Length: 474
Image (cartoon, rainbow, N blue to C red; front, side, top):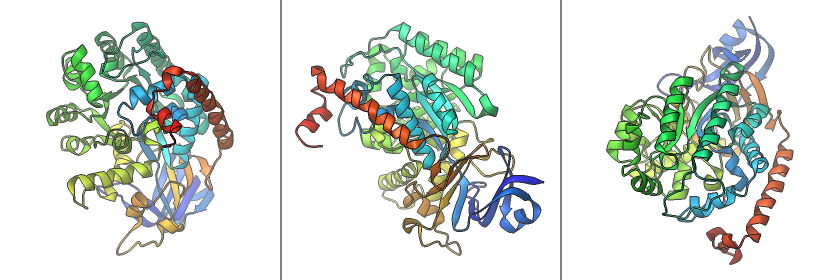
């Protein structure tokens, strides 16, 4: 059999088995969009021929990362809601309310480029207007799980911290219709390279009627529900004022707790609530860096995993997290748990690498398709150069330092090649599918208009980041 591509002589990290499944001198063969062969280089090279061979000596060959929760369009205001108490009402909302669809799409494109060049091959993008962002993902060539974020909060309406949100059902229906159009137009496209979900933003941002409708539609279309759940005290306050109950109890009342649900954060959930969500079959996304930076908290992924293996990592939004880089998420996740337990053995490198690959894929319901290097799975593969100062020296026997160095020392720029669905989209560190410089120029043009509007709006002058800029603190 003649394959399209054989990567050989590399350190192959399969992510098969209970650990990382490393083959010291390994090879991976690709035919079409699938993995055709995985094994020792000598076996693959003697069994198969290929149209192209790539020598991966002193390089890692591994599955691409799976980012289970990301808001790509928010990158238009990267770093715009940090170090403040009300990061949503006094940070991200006043900025994003001034971003038009063109600006949001520009932010999304830069974010996708950033993530892909750092080795993320699957992005679970959760944003509105998602219909305007999907073309970016198609152009770059990454795998996409998409949800249009639905809420009933009137567009561009100022929200006062602590006050009950005002709902406009027309807003919710418009966003729901956009989500359904997205499902009808894109779900399963190009042999399931695009998967769609329904995306209620949170229980405190939607009416009971809308949430019930979303649950029924998830069953009708046989798609999942991507939703923030128990994000923090702000959500809890809103829920108790509007519904006189906490979020998990309300979700149970609406029959939302099941295997279709992808629950993001659970930061404020009690131990009993975490157990209930986990045992329902729902998946959880841990966004360690974002929640740590914005709220100084560590979501209860460890507690969730006592009852379920469906926990993946997400990089969340760059106004709060600053970067969408799974190397950053792995390192931050391991360190945060070590600090929590005052124990250096907590969340070892091999464990968080699994969360960023095969376990993240399983959390999204895609474990049979992606997340590990296995014959028959989709060829979503990255190649990482180890001959850089921060990843040297290389030890492979009897001690192997490659996995801990990837988690604790890699920055993302070491990713040399990215393959998605069998197609090379990054080679020699260069993105082949879209013009990176044009995308960067575009986002900077768009953000200047947002800054102009802020500078001319008297009502924005009280914002903490505006004040800090004026007084020279940043």
